Image (cartoon, rainbow, N blue to C red; front, side):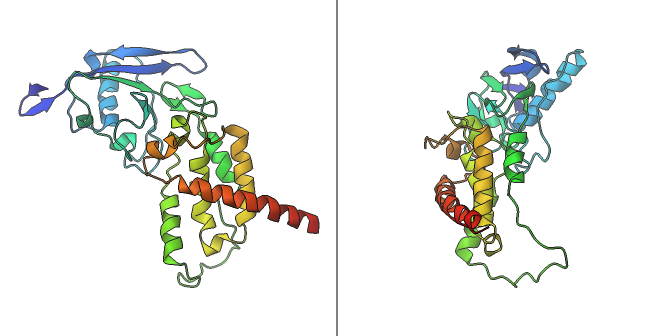
Length: 263
């Protein structure tokens, strides 16, 4: 690392995917713009510095998504050296620090690579396919009126804990980007099970399951149990939820068929 006053800095070589809307993309290398980087910066703060230097030179800044920068919103996803969100496990890109790299490193940054996530510009992709899955049934229908008492419906602790683990999904799409089949089973199962495990979610459980899984299959590939989704997930969500989803989907096909026959 090179010295800068009382602080150490690092120089890196940055290779970034640049793509104009509707155009062809290519990797562009930045050297001078990525010098003097503090190891205490987050990866997105490093990109901010690079963009400031590009703008000062009259060049177009690198487009990337961000919002909360606290590992909550899920918008910061990108491939870093071929890994979703970068080299640190269970960490979103916005929480990845430059100290995880070394002075002189070459870093390759690309957008998610999946048919369901078309590139809009540079590192920004369209993730509306994930929204379509949630819209298909990722909610609990409730009548209007005053809110019920918080203790009105008892929830077993095991169910509550498991539902909270599933609800940790931030919808970043890393599971899709990491999967060799571009499957979205981990995302869909997490969105399903945080409702299906609760007493409040039972009334629509099987209708919800079939609707969301069928919608998922319209956009994404099939799961073949590689397990890459679990490794890439910044919230460390378990692939056990995929097994629960598959179980519920099998039951849903039987139960929904019976209900259709009674109508």
